Length: 408
Image: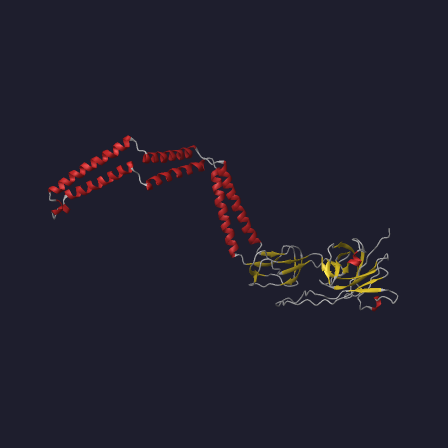
């Protein structure tokens, strides 16, 4: 079987240059240079031509997960950044308060769980049981007083009534209220005392035979409180599960608050160079809005931009590639087709596929910039691919005998 080897050449024009020095002043956004339209030349001999661009193997457009006011931007355009380096940070006062509140809630939930898990002493258990028994007895006495209790309160009422009658008679004997000096007499003082004792005895008697709603509710509340205290000393499996669920919920809320605080710092996910910076301290940024672009400029690859469906069938992953750059004279690199993106995109009426070319060496690409663009061609019938240059290079133009069609 005849082995088909595809070679590509990229004649590079500067599409966007990275300015690595002189970043002391404020950076102004620049508009990308319009991309000139190039053509694809397909020769009858099997030569394939395609445009491509140099891109970093790894790059990322970075932004905050939540919006806020930017507190600091410790990097400048063109700076190198190691993985984990701080690129920008939001103001965090409110996030810190939310974290403190969630930690307090977690501590409270954990304390309740620990209290339920702690085994009670015999004295604590006996005291709680006695409190419950006393509260229940008080309720029973209130709702269904015994004969002895009724006899006692009735006797107190009758006694206080007799004393009141005696004091009233003594007061009347000295003239009662008609006596202008009665207010200073001992009979008047005895009458007042007897009257207060009688009202107290009458209230107690009425409470025994017909307690008020407030008294009933108070007695029931005392029983419930006693039961709660005893339950804390003897938790059920359901009580423990509920307390554990409260701890889990508080833990999740605390972790979420901590994550929000952590995400207020935008750090480099990998080592690279700041190629775009669109934020200043004091500005508001929206959630998810890209503000920093980071690229690993030590590792480049090439991606074609206009390889049509007519030519994609002649390429295979692993095919050898030779790349030359018109913008960097005398630079020739080798590589292989690392990946063929299987989804074609419509570009000016053509279905275009992207080849990703892995370069064998990176050492000669110090002068390469993100977005360098050019046109490549190859002869699929040759063992070593013949690479043409830019369409403006007369040395690489096809001869009169070469039949070619122009696409795009």
